Length: 97
Image (cartoon, rainbow, N blue to C red; front, side, top):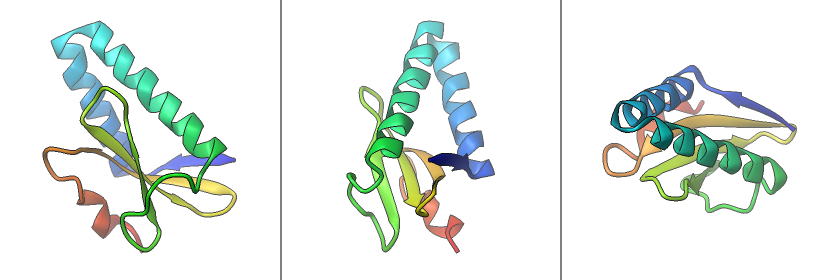
């Protein structure tokens, strides 16, 4: 199954990695690893996580206060946001048509 990141979701991921890299480079690597594991799990079981709207699902990233918000479009997973859960966790709402 194909995975596509919206541009804003990709930017959020890059900003989070940059933030953790400034704190401790190994933390940035750990964050990226957990996001990658999450994407792999989503691809394997796309309907396993809770819906947070009509079509958006949320995967909580282990050990970090972030979630992957995504839409299962059948043959493609669209990542709409990599959101910090203590800031604006519902930023994905205006990104879906």
